[in-house]
Length: 435
Image 1 (cartoon, rainbow, N blue to C red):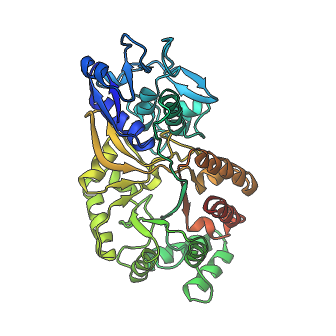
Image 2: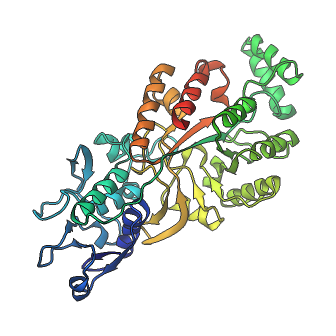
Image 3: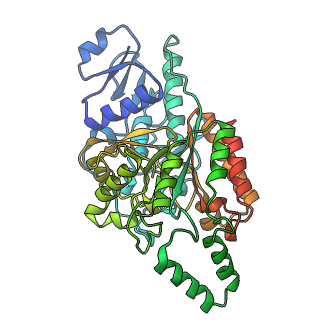
């Protein structure tokens, strides 16, 4: 048992110690603010916050875990063992030259997203605004590295201390924003699409649409057999997030009453886990999320506990409070649209902490590292350049034995339009990540 002395035990401190010592390092520990208890303890121990008399292992504190409310902490970045680190400390006897606990808390809570920031056109906090991007460590799971450095410092002092050996894992995920390109759109939408194509003199689209609707040609977005074949070949169990909502400006999936769409959902859920892809409208319409979850639950005949926000619209802490109120226990939104990498600096699932309320929200956050649209639409990469980026991200996650999560869409596997050449990218991703 590891004993940690702190001047006072706060909610933030207990949360961060559980993440770093318990979840990432697998250590049993206790926290005490009693100096006599600490001094009398003969097992492995360290002080955090301030130095005590004696030759104790000590980690100096920046102070963030002993505060309450949202402040404006001064951000300084240093390198420690080749890894960027936040909140340097200047006490000579500190085992690390930075505060790994304050740094981890700042990253995983997305503390900077509580402070004023410039929003993008969808009202989101963007990758370009992040401290990780500005200081060049967005593509590294720094929290996992900080935990390793913490563990090494502990083992250097207490050689018998056993650190948990984590295991690298890969989970592919799919967002189904539009199940089909032409099929299942209903009379009004289909007629409108025909007229729009005809007025634009795009008769090749008119002909293709007619062939798909009459069943003489497969729908280009119907890539589900291909996905299932990959899953069988590599023994994968992915997660599908279904946009199951009323039609809207940003919500253009198939009608929730469409029988074929419902059958598709059931079929995919036989080979994968399934979750809700809350509509764009659900961010402002309070009843929408509840209705969407209930309707998808009826289709699958099971409770819905997984989610990923449509357009990655993540507003902290409101989004997680809202999800928790509807019994969503696991969310996969933690990632940026504009750049790949680790939004929260971590590649391990963790529980979310509400900095406003100073409490843990019962939602497990599962970060993803890369999205198809990021590489193609935001970064405008070629397939070859995208593969190189993906390989580096997988290597980063493997280096800390973390969880690599990819986000793909059925249409980006279609080998049509802007996605020509990208099926190879995904096959390479799966082959590299799964083997």
